[in-house]
Amino acid sequence: MAERRTLRTLLLGAVLGLAVITGPARAADAPPATDNPAREARMMALAAELRCLVCQNQTIADSHAGLAEDLRRQIRELLDKGMSDREIRDYMTQRYGDFVLYRPPFKASTALLWAGPGLLLVGALGGLALVLRRRQRLGDEAFDPDVPEEQETNANVPNR
Image (cartoon, rainbow, N blue to C red):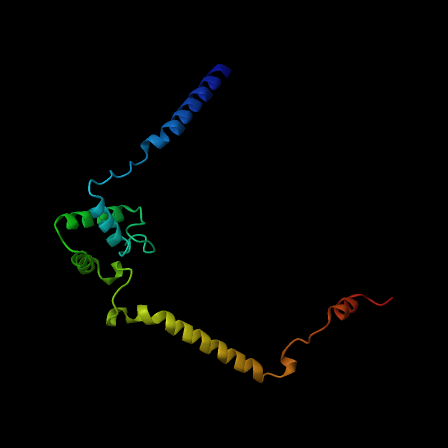
């Protein structure tokens, strides 16, 4: 009975060891280096201007998502067809909307996106001014009195 447990333990250890050793072998290979470095640089420059639709906080150039890889491949194909950078951006915008652009144009549908941070700042400063004005109108009795640290410690000690 003890021999079977030892054999099972050894077998389990061998399987786990094999899994650990061969785990990195299953990792995805890096995409092959391109034969045209100028095209690849142009593709990466375009991809740096487009937002990953899955990650949303990364560019297509930075993202490792499958969709980002597909979009990079699609940009390469469009470059091979002879399309200009502007045509490719227009194609992506037509297909995915202004959201795909990291710097969307200013128009009615993106006005809040451009003006939003300024409006939030003005609102926050207005709220701060309102709170400070109300606090200034309150009398001294609305606030805790400032007690020096020495008096606080003496107040907590009972008299003997």
